[in-house]
Image 1: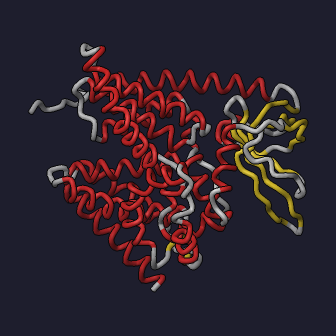
Image 2: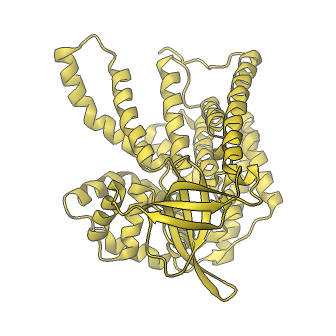
Image 3: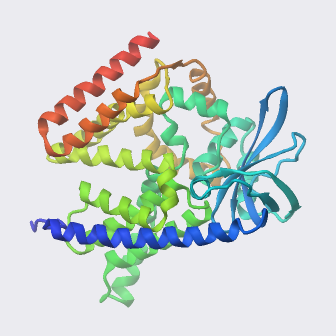
Length: 420
């Protein structure tokens, strides 16, 4: 068997790549800064934006609605509206936003701005139609929102988010590379036999792997754009492209090098991703999968699947507790739920298509009840930084890998003790 090689064979190659990324990052920041200057030329600006999230908030005895919007230029920002504003989720509006005291940092990360809605586009979008279709398939509004999150990257309310965080399955609810990987496998499985049949008859001279990749790439690219490019999907889609390019050229794919290339390229072209927590959590999940494969790639597929499920859960737990703090006695069962999600996801799509989308509603209602009671567990910044340090050390040293495993196990035992 021919052994795959690394892309960077010397420090010189790596520094050339870093220089390439720096040049593109500088250009991307320059473009963003010119947009920022144009945006802040006057006291306010007019833009068309899609409302991605709308929820009610109370503060200082006042109740109002918070809107999360994404403009046609790709700018994400927040604003306030009257509490009696109609439900405008997924609708396009024309809005005037005041930009007083807006800094470039606020602009490129995300910002809050006072605003005035000028007009509302009444025409329903395809995404709205799909949301309505899912709504009609379920009697429970919360379960409908859950499926909308799974298929259309919609946001769930804070109550549901907290419940699934207590159960340790937030990564399943928030659409990410996990979902994109399943969808790409389904597409390949469906398209491959049809393509090969046509290839044998009409164009036997073509490269089947490249053609199937291009078809899958095109469908997934359209899907990512349709969902307004969630950061976690952008990361996984970028890795999908980088991985195939490396594979097609005989270069090792399942390595930290691949992850590093994908992350640096994405940050260079889309610097806003630097401020996305979802992007970094998604990259962290892949990091620990590759870390597992560094030391256990010799195991057979079943043991690898079990090992990745258990160890990645343990390795991600300190980050999860530091950032969110949610934990319950049922949290460890997320390992089993994550494994069951792989066959469930495509099955649920088929069930919605044939009119049986509510088949698992009772199960999810039961899960939401289980997730109601959780405990807040806080980890210090020093504990989190130690975890990060051990994680990077484990790339190069087996002893550090052992210490990381024991450290993560200790955090898990501590969390269980706190809720027991």
